[in-house]
Length: 109
Image (tube, rainbow, N blue to C red; front, side):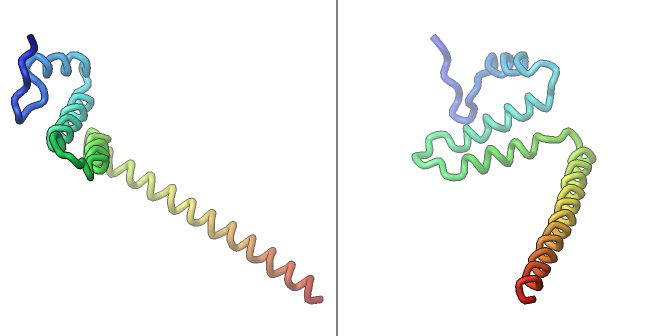
Protein backbone atom coordinates (compact mmCIF):
# COMPACT_ATOMS: atom_id res chain seq x y z
CA UNK A 1 0.00 0.00 0.00
CA UNK A 2 1.53 3.37 -1.00
CA UNK A 3 2.27 5.85 1.73
CA UNK A 4 0.56 9.19 1.13
CA UNK A 5 2.86 12.19 0.74
CA UNK A 6 2.97 14.82 3.47
CA UNK A 7 0.75 17.86 3.00
CA UNK A 8 3.75 20.07 2.29
CA UNK A 9 5.42 17.67 -0.12
CA UNK A 10 4.03 15.99 -3.22
CA UNK A 11 6.75 13.36 -3.32
CA UNK A 12 8.06 10.87 -0.77
CA UNK A 13 11.75 10.14 -0.33
CA UNK A 14 11.74 7.23 -2.77
CA UNK A 15 9.87 9.39 -5.32
CA UNK A 16 12.64 11.99 -5.15
CA UNK A 17 15.20 9.25 -5.72
CA UNK A 18 13.31 8.04 -8.79
CA UNK A 19 13.12 11.62 -10.08
CA UNK A 20 16.88 11.99 -9.61
CA UNK A 21 17.44 8.76 -11.57
CA UNK A 22 15.13 9.90 -14.38
CA UNK A 23 16.93 13.26 -14.62
CA UNK A 24 20.27 11.50 -14.75
CA UNK A 25 23.35 13.70 -14.63
CA UNK A 26 21.44 16.85 -15.56
CA UNK A 27 21.10 19.01 -12.43
CA UNK A 28 19.28 21.76 -14.37
CA UNK A 29 16.61 19.30 -15.50
CA UNK A 30 16.19 18.08 -11.91
CA UNK A 31 15.93 21.69 -10.70
CA UNK A 32 13.25 22.42 -13.30
CA UNK A 33 11.24 19.36 -12.30
CA UNK A 34 11.51 20.34 -8.65
CA UNK A 35 10.33 23.88 -9.34
CA UNK A 36 7.41 22.66 -11.45
CA UNK A 37 6.38 20.37 -8.61
CA UNK A 38 6.55 23.37 -6.27
CA UNK A 39 4.05 25.16 -8.50
CA UNK A 40 1.75 22.16 -8.34
CA UNK A 41 2.05 22.11 -4.55
CA UNK A 42 1.29 25.85 -4.35
CA UNK A 43 -1.86 25.52 -6.46
CA UNK A 44 -3.01 22.13 -5.15
CA UNK A 45 -6.45 22.16 -3.61
CA UNK A 46 -7.47 25.46 -5.12
CA UNK A 47 -10.88 25.35 -6.70
CA UNK A 48 -9.76 27.94 -9.21
CA UNK A 49 -6.13 27.73 -10.22
CA UNK A 50 -5.86 31.18 -11.78
CA UNK A 51 -2.28 32.11 -12.45
CA UNK A 52 -0.89 28.59 -12.66
CA UNK A 53 0.20 28.95 -16.31
CA UNK A 54 2.07 32.16 -15.53
CA UNK A 55 3.74 30.51 -12.54
CA UNK A 56 4.78 27.53 -14.66
CA UNK A 57 6.12 29.84 -17.38
CA UNK A 58 8.12 31.77 -14.77
CA UNK A 59 9.71 28.53 -13.54
CA UNK A 60 10.58 27.49 -17.10
CA UNK A 61 12.22 30.86 -17.72
CA UNK A 62 14.12 30.71 -14.42
CA UNK A 63 15.61 27.31 -15.33
CA UNK A 64 16.35 28.13 -18.95
CA UNK A 65 19.98 29.16 -18.39
CA UNK A 66 22.71 27.65 -16.26
CA UNK A 67 24.53 30.91 -15.54
CA UNK A 68 23.81 34.60 -15.42
CA UNK A 69 26.37 35.14 -18.19
CA UNK A 70 24.53 32.67 -20.45
CA UNK A 71 21.21 34.44 -19.79
CA UNK A 72 22.75 37.84 -20.51
CA UNK A 73 24.29 36.64 -23.78
CA UNK A 74 20.94 35.22 -24.89
CA UNK A 75 19.12 38.45 -24.06
CA UNK A 76 21.74 40.47 -25.95
CA UNK A 77 21.33 38.20 -28.98
CA UNK A 78 17.55 38.68 -28.87
CA UNK A 79 18.04 42.45 -28.60
CA UNK A 80 20.33 42.44 -31.66
CA UNK A 81 17.76 40.43 -33.63
CA UNK A 82 15.05 42.92 -32.68
CA UNK A 83 17.20 45.86 -33.74
CA UNK A 84 17.95 44.15 -37.05
CA UNK A 85 14.26 43.44 -37.59
CA UNK A 86 13.35 47.03 -36.76
CA UNK A 87 15.89 48.35 -39.29
CA UNK A 88 14.63 45.92 -41.90
CA UNK A 89 11.02 46.96 -41.22
CA UNK A 90 11.98 50.63 -41.49
CA UNK A 91 13.65 50.02 -44.85
CA UNK A 92 10.65 48.04 -46.10
CA UNK A 93 8.27 50.76 -44.95
CA UNK A 94 10.36 53.43 -46.70
CA UNK A 95 10.32 51.43 -49.94
CA UNK A 96 6.54 50.94 -49.76
CA UNK A 97 5.93 54.61 -48.96
CA UNK A 98 8.21 55.71 -51.79
CA UNK A 99 6.42 53.48 -54.28
CA UNK A 100 3.03 54.73 -53.08
CA UNK A 101 4.08 58.35 -53.52
CA UNK A 102 5.51 57.59 -56.99
CA UNK A 103 2.20 55.96 -57.98
CA UNK A 104 0.26 58.94 -56.63
CA UNK A 105 2.45 61.34 -58.63
CA UNK A 106 1.85 59.32 -61.80
CA UNK A 107 -1.93 59.40 -61.26
CA UNK A 108 -1.94 63.18 -60.79
CA UNK A 109 -0.05 63.75 -64.05
